[in-house]
Image (cartoon, rainbow, N blue to C red; front, side, top):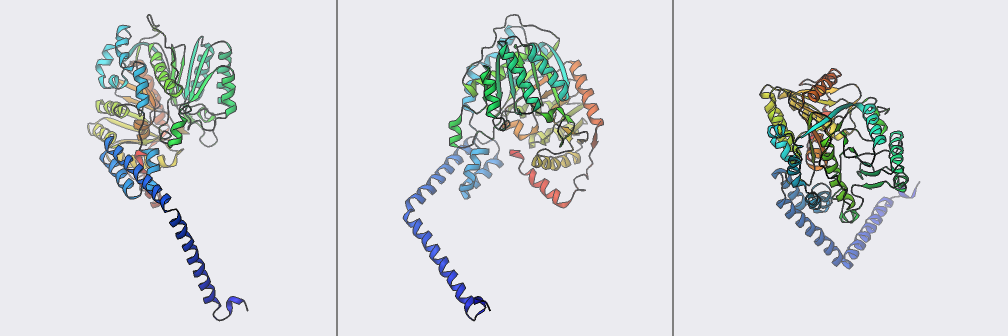
Length: 504
């Protein structure tokens, strides 16, 4: 017989445990009593910070619903909400706005007019887009649509090899794989030839990039920086900037050629991922005045990130190799208004016959949903092309919930079957097309730094139309009951993910 089997042994053991717990509680109370001042100070500081956050949220409120949610959380659960607010709620880019003023963004429209680079007709036809960009449509460009990774990187690497004096190289993600090494070799070769090379990447997107990779570039004279690298003091105050990522992908050579689109630097963007297989993406090469507008966007990012101005050329007789008009639209959290959302909502509102949108992530705001519903009700052929596969599970789940409602409202939703779809392309009637880095979600519209190229020439419109028609042939149209056919658990998770739309 064990000791605990003896009569009264169990009661004795229980009593001992109770005594031990009481002693432990007493010790904790004594410790708190000894440090009562410290505990009170910590509580006071947390509530003081919560009050500061609450006042700030009231003053910069964008939506009543979002602000009320933050305020209630800051009042009732400040210990949890304060750190979350610093990451997801704190908007602090007044210093970036100062950079834009320093580089004379407000003067760009006048400068383009003086240099006779402005396409006045397109600028007149699309005043909202040009106001958002703070630049007019620029005439005289030659544009090339680059479909998928092989065409894109062949073009970019060829452009780098031909650069004579300047290369601006910026990506959200730079991987240290075969593609990343090939890009590094190309940049190193040009640096050794005396070309000035600037390389900028997003700290979070390229977080796996090694010091050895970066140091090798720097040793060759290439100027390299993460977007937040020189703002470490902000990290000490909290990760308030980590939620605001630089999602731009820009390459500019000699201020005459530029590449913008959805690809990042990595093997999966060439379709060499065992997980995703074929990677469907789109880039554009532009040669002409619009290239320097892309360089201006890079120069703003570089000045904010590094504190160094890049001397843009003084243009008197800029080459005009083509006849196409292009608007370069950089957007981000430093904008006074939610300019990216305004631009795409305006484009949707102007549609009359066709509105085709291709995006890997589809988590639209209420305003964007309304614009899409209204277009469908006008009889516009509204199509949303999304990936069948998921790379970010929460966003993918939320997109299913949104897409199901879209179908109920007359919007046609397609799921791409041939690998993973990552392109960011819009086609409006036969009048306007866009290619860039903007996803159809709140993050791209309001949180990330993005860039979009808008095109009006019939040649580019036709190329985009033909490309998207081919994509639709590799997609399945979803029905109104698509989500209903899923398991109940899937639908719960999809609806729950939809509630997180403002931060996805």
